[in-house]
Length: 131
Image 1: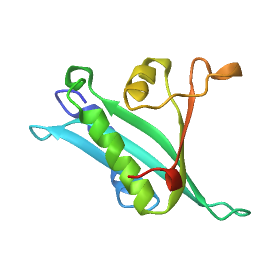
Image 2 (image 1 turned 180 degrees about the horizontal axis):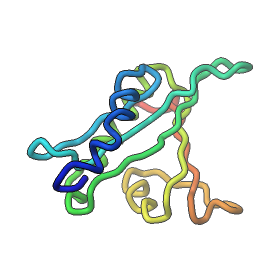
Image 3 (image 1 turned 45 degrees about the horizontal axis):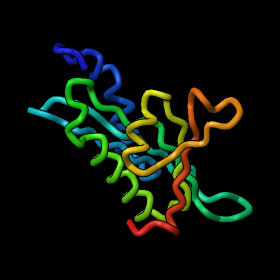
Image 4 (image 1 turned 30 degrees about the vertical axis):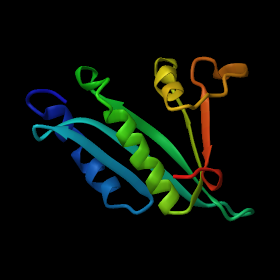
């Protein structure tokens, strides 16, 4: 987000599209009416053979000067609730190594085997969580 809003407005059409699509969860955190963070999850739908849904966490992002205030945690928890409420069995994502501490704070450990050291893989199975 820039002070002119140009960067934000550039993506407004995609934001609107995904916000209105029931297979996507996209919410934006704001402060004083300006976007400061967002989460975007996409449900890929039912798997052909096993029938359960898997969703992908594309982004959890909070502007640097708003970090440490619980915004990302709240966004992440809302995303988990959406997955649970919409019947998603697995939420999967790969994270940047700079985000490992955030996920660890949430009690999550990523798989860093083989080529995943720089971008650990995470997965939550919802039938085992008490969300």
